Length: 525
Image (cartoon, rainbow, N blue to C red):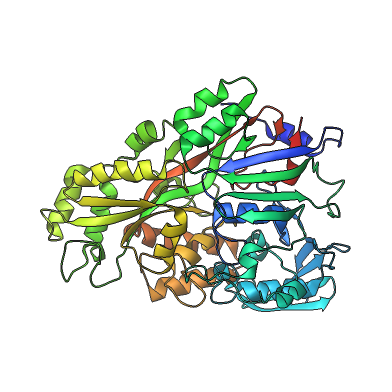
């Protein structure tokens, strides 16, 4: 594969605007689920939103935290529980309205409401208030050392626009609600929404009044975004020149694309882990053949399922080398990742069978596995391989693969007993994983905890991370939480995902670990 060094990338991002500005035709396997910026914390949804809307702080293509709608942020000198954000002046929304602190207060309060898929990131927030038109204070329940990290996908809406269009409430996506904000957008970002046909085509055009002119290349003046679920069709569109850039080159087509004149494949490890979750909390499962009992409630069964997975085989055969086997659900990018834990998951069929027998399932059992087929690299293929692996220990798995738009509500609505999920960590800190996936479900935490795990002592320890400024002690607590997660076998880690972006040679960018291209950085030659 071809790599663009970091230094070269930095030079690309600072080139003068001499190249011809043009349309970029972008494709990936799945569409954004909604345009409501707080309704779905999901990668492709955020990636599209980042073109149209902005956050107070953001990560650039190297993963570095940089200013966006806020130019400065620091803890208050008077009160360590308060973060003070100085906002960028002179910024306007796409409809011409001025951006002010009032919009930040409105947006963060909106993101803390029940239907928001981002509320865990603001769980420690006590109050958001405007000190002036361009000064915002975020007060937390105790000093929060990583609050800015929690804001990189926290998009800011125009309060007046939301009120005028009955969009003050977050869309209830899982409940099937359709709203104005789900189909329309008015941001401060580098691109404006021209048209939106979900799952078909979204067109954006350059924001002629963007505050970042002169700071970013901004050579892409129009974006035509087309989701193409079928891998062969997606590659064919790149090879034929119908699209210029695809985010997810199938592993079986990497060399074909990379060896084609005029095309490039650029690859990098992603800040994302792929894993399976098991419903361990319900007294009985809806999708198994065991009456009046839940096999997954027994940790021996969960450990047996973990031992059944041959991660090396998935890496070599399914992923063709484009993955790194995982033993924990944290990527190496993340504070709290542990090399020993990550390398601990092994395949041991005989021990797995013995554990099942000890748990009372000597002949195994059957269960349905819910899997997306348009979200992660080879997601359905991984699930198909796992079906055979579980079969080796006597567990019969019935695979049900469907598009992510139908898959994710199964988790949100607790309608799945066994499922695939991938998890990226935009904060680069384990607290993010714990808040969403380990903490018990309540009105602030655990919205993606579909395994139904709930440990009050661990919940309290997770919550304490938000206000622990002794970083050495905080990291010790993070490690202790991971020890419980591993011991309890809450999830079955599969692998760390690798990104393969395919594009025309003239597209200038690096592959960023969040898999969220920000086209204002792109150059077009």
